[in-house]
Structure formats: C-alpha cells, structure tokens
Picture: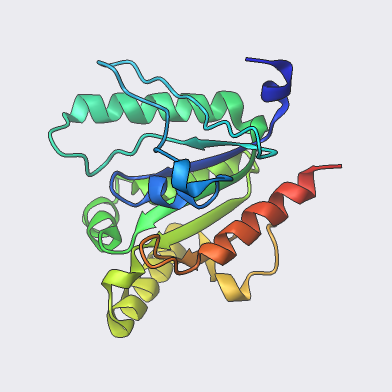
Length: 216
C-alpha cells in the first residue's frame, strides 16, 4: 500500500446481512457499472478486511461483512466476526470521515423486538454500532433501506417504531429533511431503495458534503 492510499480518508459502511450495503456502495464509486462488489472476504475463521480503492475517488470505502441474519452461520462465527469488526473500528476510527449504518426496513422490527424489547440485557446491533461510532466522534448517517418493499402506511409505521425505539434506547434520530448537521448527538435517517434509486442522490450528497468538511 502506498503512502497516498494510506492518507485517503475512509467511508465505512456497516449493517446486518442482506440490508443492501453492497448495492448502496455501488452508487458511491466512480463507475457503478464496473463495480463487482466488496473486496473483503471471510476465509475460514479469519476476518480479512480490504478497502474498496478507486483511483478516481478522493476517499476509500470499507464495506464491512454483514452478520446477524446470515444463513448457515454459527453463533460462534457470528460473534467472531462482530468482535473483529469492533476491533477494526477501535483501531482505525481516526481514518473514518463518515460511518453509514444500513438498516433493512423489512427486518428492523424483528431485530428490535428480539434484542431490545424481549430482553433488557441485550443490545440490538443497529443501536450498538451507532453508539460505537458515537463513542469515537465519527459522524453517523443511518440508512433505512429497501423501503420500496413497503407501502406508505407500513413505511410510516416502521419509521415511527424505529424512531421510538431509538429514543427509548437513548439515541436521538431525526428525519433526513430535518437534519441540520452532525453534532455528535443527533443522527439523521435517510430512507432509501437501492433497487429503485430512492434517496441515492441525497446519499451521495451527504457523503460528498461530509468529505469536503475534512479536506483543506
């Protein structure tokens, strides 16, 4: 790795499996049609993370491996992946100019009911990672993806449930159109559909805007 690559800031994207991280990432590279997916992989029990490095982009992208709803994956393996991701974030947080936590609008109710409402001793992964970025003062954008699969009434119900749950957990979420800027205490939520390209323009704009804030 060259010194130039090492100096590039990093956009980090995280979320459970099947939330659409890679599909959203495709819209953030310089040539979406040539993007073949994330370059990280999990051979055996060792987690290898590799940045998506596009020479035409001023920053790198780290699309972290998803977990939580993975099929045919043992609990031990899931915990191992989670631990390695947390270690990586703790070690490299100074490189991140923005963290994107991607949420599957179709599965977030299941996650919160299982890991938040039914057991006070557990923490839902979505809230856990928002808190982790908050701890390191990394700006966080929450993306509620796959909204095209919901009608307007169900979309509103999920949004309300998600916001109310976050408030009970101690996190303050705000609708993207009401967002005034990152201050470490309020986290904007952008509704998207990678399939229908809903919210993609806004996603790209906030990434570019946040990157410009850290460049001289």
